[in-house]
Image (cartoon, helix red, strand yellow):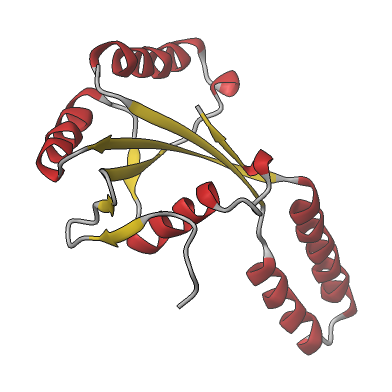
Length: 168
């Protein structure tokens, strides 16, 4: 197995990351473009985040990860349709779709937001997680073990481009 750049000991049965000196839980936060929301919806989202910051006094890390948009699966599907297509009009449509997907890959980035909770013991961390769930009213998602490991790798890999991960 390749040597890892981060001190991951294991991810346990509760899907908690155990490092050499602490335990970590990472949640992906639902992202919303607040500039496109109505004023009331925007205020609700901002108040919820403000409540988290003011009420949740434990240390947290907010991670913002920009990754290239990936449409390779969709492109492969359209390539297979193009190979089997006999209708010239539909073939033109498929080529346009393929070009659109290729432009998306080149021009767009996907921004994901994560909140990291950590503590020196697993029991304390589990209490923080419960408190976090009660206080934080914005939708968040649990990450799988492999997603957590990939995120840790991106954060600790010195060869990974700096602009991709911003630690707050």
